[in-house]
Length: 113
Image (cartoon, rainbow, N blue to C red; front, side, top):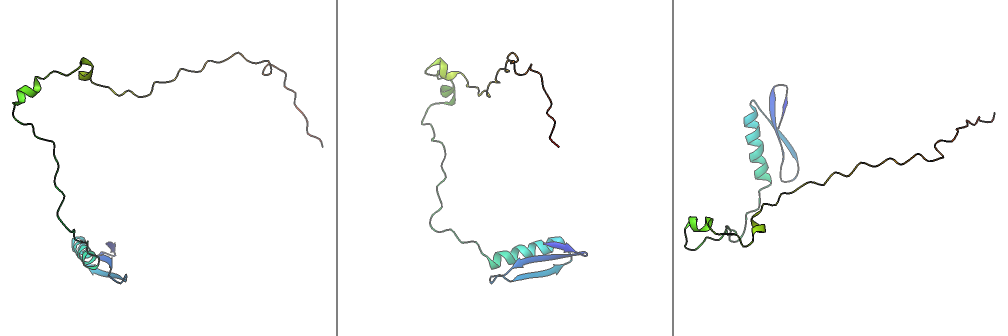
């Protein structure tokens, strides 16, 4: 859908691929007509067969909720929360002593003319 000079145009392609436009006075009418024409020209395929079953966590058999809360972990280390830490920052590089070549005298070379 687009707007041009105060009119709203529904813009879609038919089954053969031809571009079709129709003008409307409101944006809502243009959008609803465009959506209907797109669905009519290119319908979505229907699903076949049975729908997939919905999976969920297994239900506990018997017992009360208080019993579940009072159970102790197998090991004390399992009860601790594991905290994800980011990478540790690397140590700053140590500057080495200046080499002898950096202390040498620099001589400018003149280009040949």
